[in-house]
Image 1 (cartoon, rainbow, N blue to C red):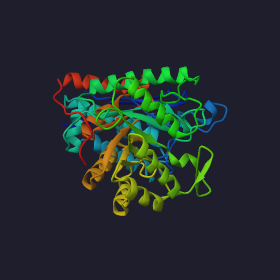
Image 2: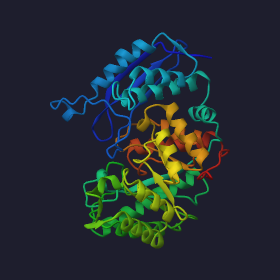
Image 3: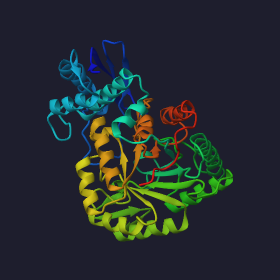
Image 4: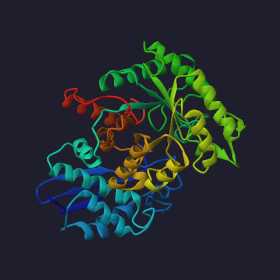
Length: 424
């Protein structure tokens, strides 16, 4: 069976932060028609694949994507429409060759990833498979429903408050099923809102649907989370509802130091603080605990936290197989965040997953702060069997769409898929 492309068209749309992005529609002569919408990040690694933005200041403050849309509707469509490809991966290879740059700067990673997502969807439809089933076949893994990590307090680049740490997440590790995990998060989220409001804090939302209280010290937030978990009737910890952190340390590193809640810390002092946090609170995962260029610090972070917690790399790895191989050789981290638009194609994403799996690194599939209603990442998390996903709070339509898709997959499979974090 080949993938024949009869129609390819992109249009400029808005993401959840009121910034332009694009949606791509792809059709085949057999009547398959699919759509893919492209997310965008606010907190990004310097080595991510590069989006195409128009830079015309009088239109969307320079953030328009008409150039990327033009690349899809022009050069890419001319290259792909009317042709047959053995697989969607072959479409990816054609896109990479057509762009001809290391970081997809010529055509734009947003243009390329939109076509890649659509081609993957189309091949799954051609084969009569659910997207997650097809992705499981491609990755050679047993599918698994992931533990959702709900970002319930936003800081850093995702909220207009004084919190330097970017994400505080609920992780229902002890839930018996996807449905119970979503229920736990919703109930804790509701209790957290009530606690914050009673204490006089704002309950307005950040970019990812979490609350953005006027708190400064991460320990204050963690105390509120533990109390909210207990208020909702759950046990804080790995047997109940645990906590995951994404400090996003790139964002508060300056002049070789880290500035957290007014304190200027060295790499080792920040690692000390993480150890104290893990001692005091049920934190099971720390993502981007140090900056992407602090490789020596990351080595010490991994050695000290690795036996006790998941040490997750995002900005430092950027879903790049070559960088991940270097990290494995250097003993950096023990888990990787997986974002399709960081590397730019589905096939390269699956290669990054394979590198992690072969090295014994866990993986967590992730959304971006600028999201759409597209649910591709929910199917991806199930298909690669990683057992972890983060898609923001259990609120806001573009976030909940992913969790609802997971609930639908759970229901459709009649509880036959395992739920939980995959063993490394």
